[in-house]
Image (cartoon, rainbow, N blue to C red; front, side, top):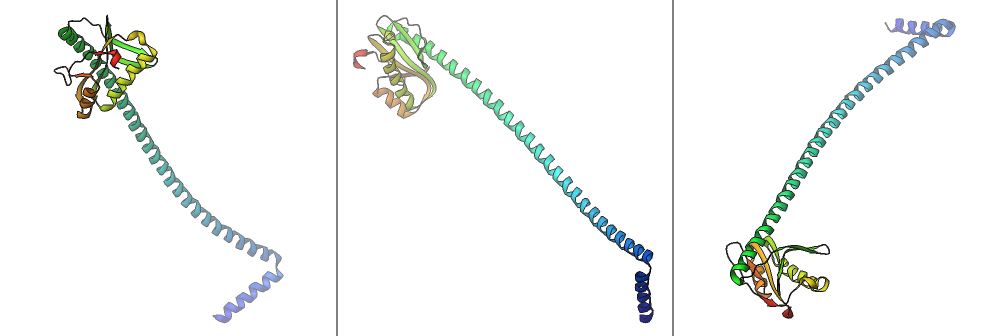
Length: 215
């Protein structure tokens, strides 16, 4: 068996050496065989590439779906914010209207003075509640929840009126804040600054008329 194999190998080598056509045939076969192996390897690599590409497209699709869901959530949040802003605006306007109505009634009831109340603007600053009758003016704010900061804000607005619009001031003034709820610190600050603080059903600090000379 070994001798036959050796003899066959020797004959093959002799043929390759002597027979040019046979040599080309063997070379061609070997080349095709190598090409087929490479093609098989290339096909396998292409298959893996397509599989990876399909996985990538699935991931991209999942990301797009996630992005669409995120945009829907963002749109929902924007819609909620817009509704909240509209609700807050309506609530603020209703509180201001209620404040003017209650304060007007109380001034008539307690002081027997008719006072039309409205909002005024000084530059870009708004004063929620303003009215004047002869030598008395009312300057105030309306809010759902009163914190201490609004006390200082009202005092600052009166000072700004003194500097920019003294024509709106009178010899006497009622400083007032209308609210649904006031924190204890705000109530104390209102007392210290002579501000009439009231709800629709009761006073939190007494109504006080001050001379502008005391400001």
